[in-house]
Image 1 (spheres, helix red, strand yellow):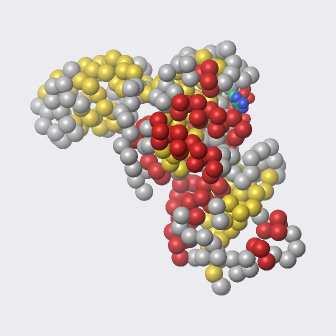
Image 2 (cartoon, helix red, strand yellow):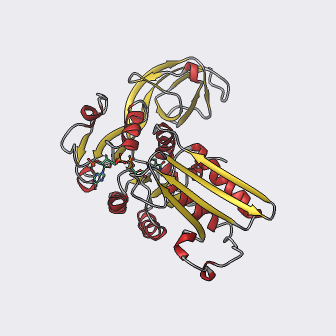
Image 3 (cartoon, helix red, strand yellow):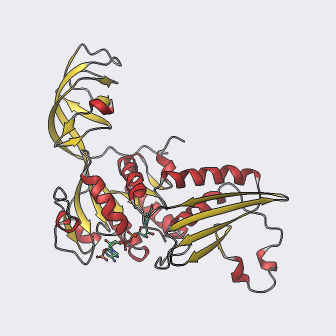
Length: 344
Ligand SMILES: NC(=O)c1ccc[n+]([C@@H]2O[C@H](COP(=O)([O-])OP(=O)(O)OC[C@H]3O[C@@H](n4cnc5c(N)ncnc54)[C@H](OP(=O)(O)O)[C@@H]3O)[C@@H](O)[C@H]2O)c1
């Protein structure tokens, strides 16, 4: 993996007292990395700081002998990432916008959505701290400089939005499903030219990351599997981003070896599903489903089924997307799946 360029994030001044913390390096004018214990987390602009931050200090540390806990008073600046969120008024995007509002290190500087274009995002979502404007297109929103562009709209506009963001030299997090492997090849070329990272996650939920990992292990040992993708009746894209990503990842492990090749199917070939990156995928769209993905591995007289079911709230996606936003600048080119930035 190439090392990405450092971010040119804006800095906000802050000052706080913290009683217990660990300095991983220290010194006047040096970068100071602080790991706060959650119960001792200080607040910045009224928000709790509960992560590891890099601080450019005019720091005064008393008795600092890293990595011992110490008492400090810091005067410095907190690095803030400016985020532009496309799809900020939607089911998934609005949950992410509200989650960003609760962080101290992310600022939502612009949003994209057509119906509410011209309004302030916070007014639409009832979240006063979201003061960024809503624009009808990514091209208009990107006039506001941002470090990370998040794409959460619809498949038909996602590719254009992502390419526009890369041309503005933003890193990109992609939540929208429906982009093809060919789209990602084109996006990867532009991202590498711009020396920017694109982190595309068909599903940001941690449990889906685990499904993918477990399936990769199983595919190493079991040569036959098929994927079933369940979605609600209003879901327009098929297969789901989760199913596409799963098939894509398994293609790097091996190709399945069906006993009867698909070309030898007698009857309707379509009834065997779509071939996605070598795997057979069957998409079901009916009322009552949210989103589920199931993969079944079979060997003679034994079978293994791994299934993931999404709940009704978009909260797990927001949590994963926050992690992706914070980490995408460490990447160059397209990376697929949240585990690209997780230590699994
Ligand atoms: N990766 C994951 O974990 C994950 C999780 C959930 C959903 N998703 C995917 O994320 C995408 C969005 O899902 P959703 O359920 O949030 O959809 P949604 O509720 O319909 O929201 C779509 C958002 O995009 C905006 N939008 C749509 N088309 C646009 C266009 N042409 N230009 C500008 N804005 C546009 C909509 O506002 P206007 O209609 O006002 O323009 C709205 O804000 C889907 O592809 C879905 O499959 C992924």
